[in-house]
Length: 507
Image (cartoon, rainbow, N blue to C red; front, side, top):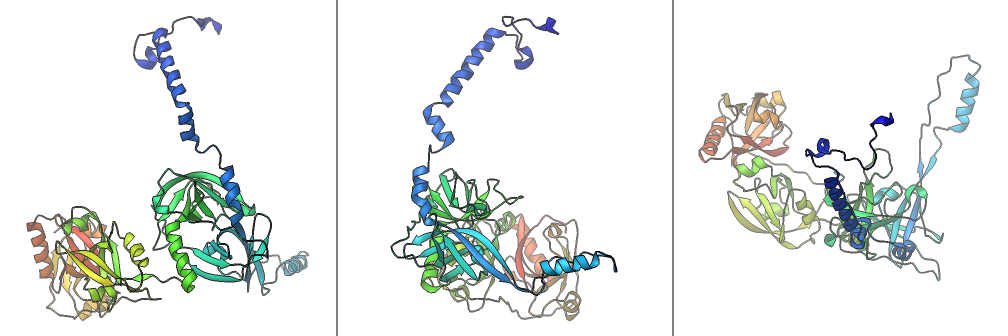
């Protein structure tokens, strides 16, 4: 075994590793370079960049007193409990199991459950912010401070489920004023900035964790106004409603959600940005509810295909799929097929940015809206309304009947609207256009979920009443050099969407 060992001074070829015949002398030089690189990387400045702040003890000590644990109780009625195990009739265990489960569970008896979360003081008079889901449905709510002071919540000032924000009120004990936190500007925060979270994970009380901002404007499909801050600071169950701090001690987010297969932190947590939260909190203070701006349009994303069909250089903006009658948008002259490029001086980068811009606008304000229509930009003024509790979009068009005739184009078999087709495909009376009776499974249309029974309402912003009109518009699109053509498609219930189909697809 030891016969192959040649000693420390033996020159060992390194050709097998580096593809060269140089020996140990070259290796020694390479090792020296590596050492110099390591020394440079371990310089004081480099260490501080890798490890972050040397300590946040002073900052945490200053802020912990304003962060509270929130506990709630809720009564659940009509609980069925655990089902009784199946025991053979007449078995000696039958009476035992029935007696045991009847004593342990009473199906009709109300059951009280508890939950825990976090919150923080924003006003020394007793205003506390938390998540709506922490206190939703609670019969009683208590807040506990780091000095073990426990106060009962006297009033839920207001809640906003869409952003998961709730505002609570307590009365401080005499001679014990509350310490309030200050909100920072979340817009100025950058990816990579250090942040600190304080909360009540798993009911353990004030816990401090540190991390960075991993991303901004995250959409996690929890609501129409998603623009979360993502952080790798450990956030666990019970942290909900707690603050996310910048390194200057200001609240730049309200911790609200995590992504985790186990329920514990895996370094992906989300916080409502402070600039969103403060707008909601101000409205809850003033009205006890949120009052969002309303434009009155249903929108969809501008895809690459749609952008090409409209002659746009790149996808951006929000495509108007429908306009609510008598809405602010309708009164301003916004039409189906318009692309909203800018709202009140802010560029509409994508579909999801428009609802946030409109929602934050003051009710009654006259706002300029830049739209793209027929390859030209146009500015209209819209007086923003109050978002109604519920709104129904219904587009009514006059019906026009033609002689039945089948036409095939772009993998679609088309026929004029008729009573027979309405009955067969259960098409609503208010849906008009050209009926799609068949779809080639290998066509671009099939790949974009167009199905038999759908109705083509418009092609290239022009209303359609016959298959011949569809053919004419598609030929015009080819002639103009467009790669795709824009269709407005309605389903049987009147729900509409824009679809861009490749004009070189199946004929």
